[in-house]
Image (tube, rainbow, N blue to C red; front, side, top):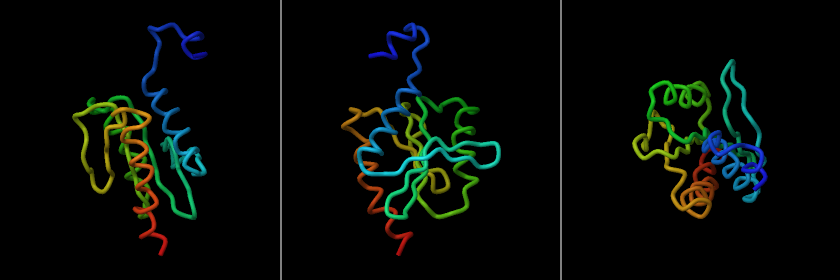
Length: 130
């Protein structure tokens, strides 16, 4: 599309594209989507629906230690009990890190893991709201 016309192929940013997919999927599912700031860190998306929040970090690859630490830091600094998720394009960092779920975002996107993750949010966050 327009992005490919504007940017030369050598400057393509998969992480940016994943963020766009996540953003529009959350909107499509009826979430109010904001960017979160906590100190000098930023949460890619704070998604709110019916008073329940979910925090999202989105990255193409977090196998490098610096990237791994950068993506986890803002979520670990949040002191509430709402769901925290990192969506990544890599296969090596999938898991749970002190309650922060890391899932592979690129599986058949946009019809793969992301809609299932977003669909499960209503079930997962209800327990925090009563």
